[in-house]
Image (cartoon, rainbow, N blue to C red):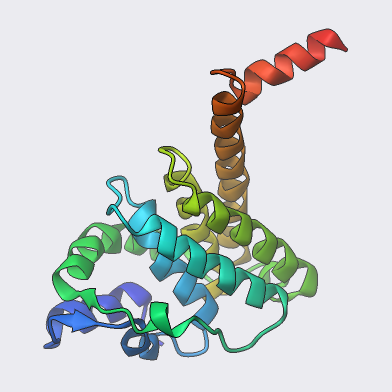
Length: 208
């Protein structure tokens, strides 16, 4: 199967498309790698250095639902009709992909099947599903700083899952943990009047 960056370039830039597209129209590119493909596609807008506004919350909901299905051992993903059939402007998608495809090509250059149990074993799938579901929740939070790093973790993990590359998947899960730590720190800072997670931990250590 052709690399994802090649497939996206062909589908969105070399072939003629209508002005609006829906998710089911794109899924033909996924083949058997559909869960990883969807994680990559849905996290991409928020994972970019300059995220597209308005995508984090609905795409976070979709990622959360997909991660739960991965945890349940589903082979075919399900998404609500209102989401799957919601039309997306072709120009908007092309704008996101122009920024995202070069990042995708960088990961593809180092990707190969390895450390397969991380992607295929039951414990590996559980770890991936749990962390990605939590990052999906983080993407739903309408607070600056809670979207980009979690989305990057989902993007990298999803790509590794799609390519059966356990090393890249593991790297993505590490980014997910970092993203979750950042989100927790931001939420604690808001809850405790500006104190970061690090400040709270220092206080706790001194108190103990």
